Length: 247
Image (tube, rainbow, N blue to C red; front, side):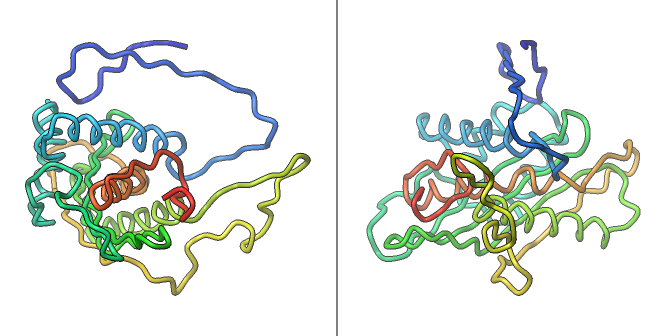
C-alpha cells in the first residue's frame, strides 16, 4: 500500500509505504497500536538527522514544524525541562561508569487527536548496559481541559506503560510456540518498581475541539528514551525492548 502523509512538518516531499503481513499469531488491541512503533521510528530518525547536521534536537524539530500547536508543545516541554541547547551526543563522552543524557520526542497523535512532547533523562551503566530513566517531562495539548488531575493521571500512566514496553516487555517464542506465557517470562514494570520523576505541562486550548490524551504519552516514550541513550553514549538503539545486550 502506498500514499501521501500530510504530517505536521515543512518537508514537502513525503511518501509512506505500509505492508500488511499475515501473522501466525493471534493479536489483539494494545495501547497506542502501531502509533508507538511509527513514532519510535520517525522521531529516532529525526534525531539522527539533527545529529548529522550538528543541530540541537529541539531546535531542529522547531525549524521543520509548521503546526503552531505542536510547536508550542515542544517549546513548553523544553522550557519546563530546562533543556540545554546543544547537538547530540553529549560532547566529551568518557567511560566513567554511568553516562547521562537527555532526549526529546513529539507527536500529533493519529494526525489530529492530541499533541504531546516528552523530554526523557536517563542514566546508562557503561559496564552492564542497564538503562535507568530518571526524569520525564511531558507537555500535552488535548484541547479544553475539564479534569486536570485526570489528564495528569493519563499522561503519567501512559509514560510508565511506555517505559515498561521500552525497557522490559517482549514476546518470545521457540520453533514451535510462544514462550512468553506469564509475568515471569513476560516481565512488565511491576508495582513498586523504581520509576522516574514525572512532571507535566498542561496546555489548555479552551476554544479548541476536544482531543485524546490516553495514548499520547506512551507513544513518545520509546523515542525519547532512545534519543536520550544516544545523547549519553553515542549509540543508536533500533529495537525494543532496550535490553542490556542491545545497549
